[in-house]
Image (cartoon, rainbow over all chains, first blue to last red):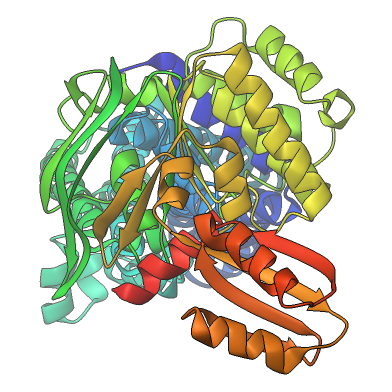
Length: 262
Length: 303
């Protein structure tokens, strides 16, 4: 593993980001807009149902940005090079899959961190919700777990794009939204119908959002939820990496990878 | 020493055999042309040599090392340029090159980029966005990217495609100059036979995924015995026709005063003198020796 090659992809990602208004929109404007909209909803809900419910909704929405940003940065970050017909140039350099994905994971995590910090400041100053009320250690544990899930999800989507080409590229920004209702981001799992609850409990972020909601009344570490989330994340990431490698190999066997930029 | 050795390389896509059991090698400092009609297997071969398509059989060795077992070591010493791949258009030339210099772990990246930009005369373009460059400028930047890691071999897939003749000529001159200054091996594909003839030391013809001919451009041309003789005369069409029929020559009249004769090179003087002795006044004599294109057409059409 070479740090210089990882750094190269991170620099590359930085150069593209700073010169692309749409990327800046996607990673700053839209997430912060969501947080602001849900901030107003929080004020409304606080009046109607009590402060805690409103807080829980806003915190859920801010934490959701970690998954959303990480998976977006990795999947769409890679697509910029597919669209520019530059991906082949990158993959014929000595970079390994691990280095490539690790670089995007770091940049994706940094972007998520930036959104969380900005979102936290906005929610504190404008909507009276302090993210740090969850506890710093809790917040870090949640961030890591959600980022791991976002990373795993992104590389599964990348695997599908490598295997089936750009005709499935919309999955990069659309598929994660399908899972959002199941992860009980802004409401408890208990309100989902029974059969959907079973699916929800297969997803690691569900436990994180449940734990974060619990923290709004109890600052203690939610060991059970965190433990299950961590365990499921390990299984998920293992399967996601296997899936990506399988799809990438299939893509190279069928010649799809070489045609990706055609 | 062989820089690249390919042995029994095969690739199938379902029932279609794109590359059929081909073997060849490239030596240090050699330019090997890979020719063939569309669908002959050239691009698939290059994709396998770059590791972006996995072969179904055979072996690829760079510097005597198995490519798929030593992927990173091999890729560190090879590079690639093609008219069909571009760099990232949103970033500047310098930013693109800096990223690739880091991917290839070049220690003095800034110095290296500066020197190559001077060599290829694009120093003024380093701060321009790649997408704003002309096709010729992009080709030169792609060449710099391909040379950043001091490769021992470069795979070039139609690097001059879509360039106008003047820029294509300059690009070829750059390749020739660079080959002279450095001992780089090059695998070169192109549809332009004159280009291949000009820069390649050796040529491989692919047809339906198989190697159907392999030699120097000169020797390949020698294999075609037919020379085209074009005679322009003022009058005497029937006399010429009679003479050529009597001498069993293949010919056709392009116009009433122009005849095109396909014959063996050694018979050309005999035909010219023979027609002259019949009292024909020839105003123009043009001898067209076989070109690599004739070889290409003969091979393509015979398969």
